[in-house]
Every structure is written in structure tokens, then in C-alpha cells.
Amino acid sequence: MIGVYGAIILTMIIWGSSFVFTKILLTAGILPHQLIFLRTVLGSIALYLANKIKKNSLKIEKKDYKKFLLLTLFEPFLYFIGENGALLYVSPTLVSLFIAMIPLFIQISMFFLAKEKLKSNQILGTIITILGIILAISGSGKINEISLKGLVLLLLTIIAAVFYNYYLLGLIKKYHTLQIVMWQTVIGAIYFLPFVLFRGKEIFLMQWNVEYILYLLILSILATGVAYALYSFSIKKIGVNKTSIFTNLIPIITLIISIIMGTERFHYMKLLSVVIVIFGIYISQIEITKKRR
Image 1 (cartoon, helix red, strand yellow):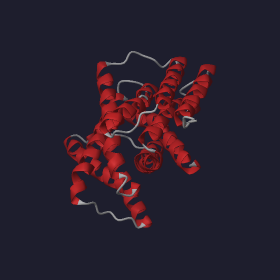
Image 2 (tube, rainbow, N blue to C red):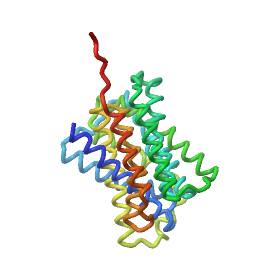
Image 3 (cartoon, one colour):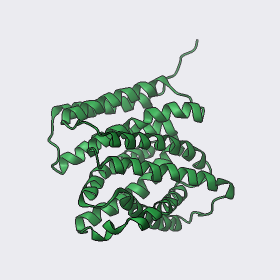
Image 4 (cartoon, rainbow, N blue to C red):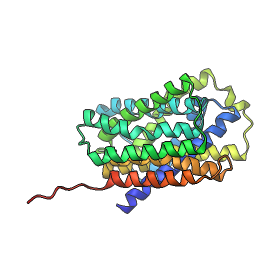
């Protein structure tokens, strides 16, 4: 189990830092759909090589085509449109705050969609972690007025994440996680291709440097490829609810990365928020057993 939780934490570190790197690239001039297209193309190549090394079968059954198309429609297509689009209007920390609310929606939706049992400690842990996140954001002085466009895009992200986890839950029982993520990124690149053909000149007009290329590679190989594989692996081992609760770590990690990069200042309120978030995750993970006479 230590390996599973290590994989989840590593995934959250990668995704937490991705908000900062994405914001930097978007500020540099590249558009959201163009950045996502580059991420999915480069991620597909890396995942294809990884599957070949692992000697995984790349074939999927015809009856599962629709499931893969829907899986990819929700994520990365709709999810990244919402997430990256929102970063044009609000700060990375605020975006990560909304992303951290996804587990609560997932737990409730899985109760109705997949008949997964909803435990009281999972709900309580989610509420505690969200309170810790709110404290972290308010203590950092990052709460600003959110534009209507930003709010709509963030809501789109949450809805996409819920349905992505629903379809993923069915596929991971049948296919290898690397296989799923590879087809997810390949189909995602195809979804975004028409948009790039219609408007893609910014990719060539942008002044790429070593720093920007490094951020793109991190987003493509680690955030799009490795992190999704680890996330799917974790869901397969401990389920959607327990895995998704760890996304509450993302805003804290985003704040830490921002402090390291000099865009945030350290404050004791941030340290307190970290403690609260970790405590909330612990509460959500403990097994509650009833003693019988």
C-alpha cells in the first residue's frame, strides 16, 4: 500500500506544479488549445514507447471504442479546455482550489452512477481538506474576484472530471493503465487537431527558449503521461473515492511551488493549512469498523 500512496502523492506533485508552468506558457503567448495539443502529441509518443518497452498490447475491443471516445471527450478534451481556459482569467492557485473540490463531486456522483458506497469519514475528510485549502488561499492573499468566464470554465472542468472517473472505473478493470492513458492522449490529440489547424500560428510565433521547452516537456511527459498512468493505477488499487481525495493536496503543492519560484511569500497560515489538509486526508483514509457483540 505504501507504493500506491507514494504514486498518488507523486501524481499530485506533478499536477500541482503543472498549474504554475501552464500559466507561464499561456502568459508567454500560446493559446490553451494549442498547448494541450502539443501536450497530447508529445505525451502520446512517450506513452507509445513506454507500452512497447513494457510489451503491453495496444489493441482495444470494438465494443469499447465508444467508452474510450467518451473517456477522452471528458478528459483531456473538455477538462483541459476548462482548466487551461480558466487560467487565462484567474490565478493558478484559485484554479487549483476549484480542482480540489472535485473529490466531493466525484464521491457523490459515484454513489449514483456506480453505486459505490459513500462513507461518512470520506465526506468529513473532504470537508476538512477543503477548509484547509480555503485557509491556504485566503492566507496567501490570492482571492480575487472571479470572472464569469473563469467560473463557467471551472464548472466545466469539474463536470468533465466526474464523468472521466466514471468511464475510467470501467476500463481499468480490463486494460493496462499505460494502454488506457496512451489511447486517451492519442484520441485527445485528434480531438484538438481541427482547432490547431484553424488557429495554430501562435505556436510558431511564440519565442521558444530552453525554459519554455522544459516546461512543455514536463507538462507533456510527466503531467499528461506519467501522472495519468499513476492516477489510473491508484484507482485500480484503492478505488475512485480514496484516490480522488488526494487531489486536495494540489492547491498546497501549487502554493509551495509558487513560493519556491518566488511568486509567493511564506506565511504561518499556509503552514497551518498544510496541517489541516493532511489531517483531512488521514480522516478520509481510515477504516471505520463497527464492533459487534
